[in-house]
Length: 421
Image (cartoon, rainbow, N blue to C red; front, side, top):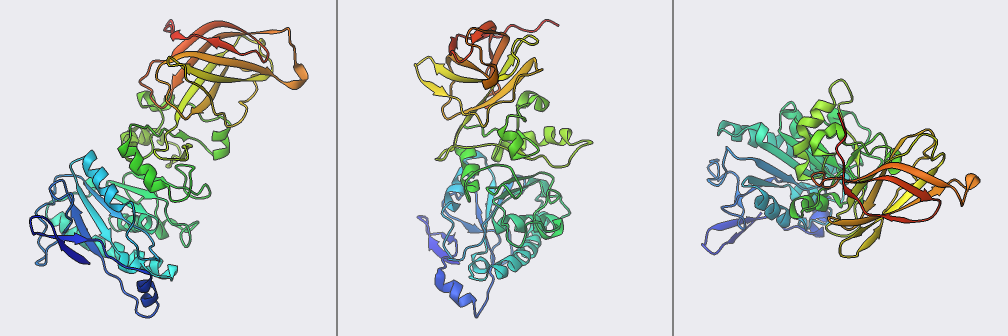
């Protein structure tokens, strides 16, 4: 623990400065120390201890406001998490709340991973004592949102178990796998540990919320707060099904579209609870992101209705053109399933640019290789393009379209005609 002075000469608390030397020292003299640092809009750049030396609650803590607990993970080199201060600033910019940084660096800084794993239980027990103290001051478990990275995700889960799942929310960001994967619920973060548990994981073999590069979860969560991106995700049985456009129906989420990743996932708490009645108690969802910050991608769904037997066996591709003349090919995961015996097909497509003002849709139909017919025409009864990323935007439609195989046609869509009831 380190104290510095701010401009008004009041002491500020800093995150523990450790190094690889501390990891070596831990081999012979293991130690654990837990420091709770409180940030609010009143002390955005000057952390204070949550409890003073006389055990009184810091004056900046407001028991009536939401409280976010940030818990880091394994730190074998002892370094301060590079994302920590920015995360605090983003949260306080988003909402007037209490942010508590749980500094257990002396306990996470060790070459012995198993020792850090065992320390997670000790940290959770210590935190539970402080939480009980906060409850005596009038705080509410329902207002607590734990955000844990790596081992911090499991610490959050252990705290939730101590309070019988009554924490308001737990967010796990890349929960640690070794020593936790495939363990029973009481030995790891579980969906029963809070009233709402959401997990962003970069490992497709673990708990799934997103498919991304390792340790990107924390930065994606921050991007969901820093940017206007709606990181829309798709409920699906498996990533394989998601990749083949089998999970594009967001209608069951009513006007909200499919769930969003990140901080705003809380908006879908009620509708997710409604969906699991009589069904699975967990919802697994998938999405892809771009490779660089802010990781935004934009999803559209193209719904095509064809007359019976007009289109026997084939697939479509399309591109979008905006009013500025910018054109982009859609990213398809795989060739969408054949239209044989189907009157409607829904095609999930991803773009790396936001097409807010679409001027035309480039559509191409491909027949299967053993049924090619260069002179044949194929009729489409209706076509509807809808943004899933921004569901508030009105869909665009075209009706009565005739295509030839492998010949691209640019269609100029209009507002959709309401269906007659």
